[in-house]
Length: 422
Image 1: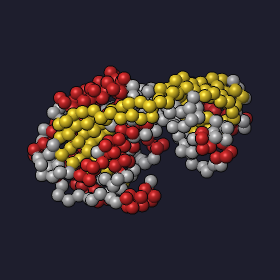
Image 2: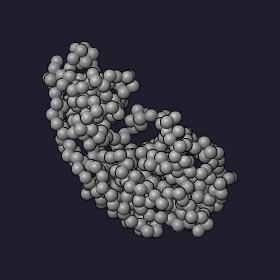
Image 3: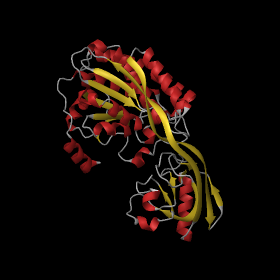
Image 4: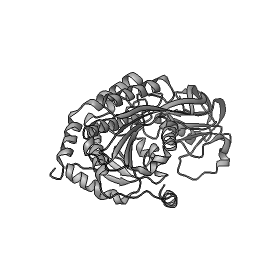
């Protein structure tokens, strides 16, 4: 580690010796559960995290309130009517329509091109929340999301549709597919309740001023809201306590930071990133000074932690040097970042993330415990969580103090990149 400065060694010493992040994650999971946006648990978690910002000496710690289209999830049922009669356990998907529909079952794999007109009135079974499943657009009667991987239970996630939508575990989805293959026709009844209405949630905000050398700042974020069925430790408790810990450590070295750092814990990412969108809109006149943002999502679950950036090849040398100086394998990839990074990407700001190492693609992400009842505190590895903090804090310090840095992209360049890669 010959390439590290004395300050970076102090950062690493604190990152690898402290248990603060894991203690905070334990409270989030065991006291506030899934922190489903707009619920009392969501508010309680926001106030707990705000208290930590105050305890750690962040400047101007506060909550920023906003409203969003949320829901209260009710019960659902799934019944095979023909060729056999059987009840299948299921979950109501958030932001779906309430209703009771009986129709023929159709399987759609999410990759094969289909004629959506042939889906009119049918109940669709699929391994992903398919983009064309919108009742008003396709007149699909209902949707069943089957988990693509075994032994992970029924998945959850917002569907944003006016049709009844439920999920089943992989094993029951495979049974339904076998019935279709053997009999050709399967009759299904799906009923669900989901009350959709305007709700309130809160971003948790704090700042660590630099030494005044520049008006630019960095922003480290991670959403603290999760889903209704589990503790949401991986998605996204661990990331939000990791960036809070990065802030705590760097606050001890603020006199050495040429730029300021903001820590913002967003809410409602699971409902469509309302929190990050509200933040950018509210602070739009400050975005020209935002040099870089980390948006963490789904990290600390064990194994190697990797860095991704939203197609900024200029940053590859920085992370190669970081990996060499830390004597730590840090896989690096150019790929689209998690949900809250996208509003920053859209206005041309360099964005990055730190995640558990995995291939690109939604199905790869679903191999984790994300969005399942098994996303619990015991799945987080303290060693991996410390590694996330170490990578983020040291790279953040280097980014804050780097003399040269990529300029923001213009709208035409952003649109070209989105059309080419996303």
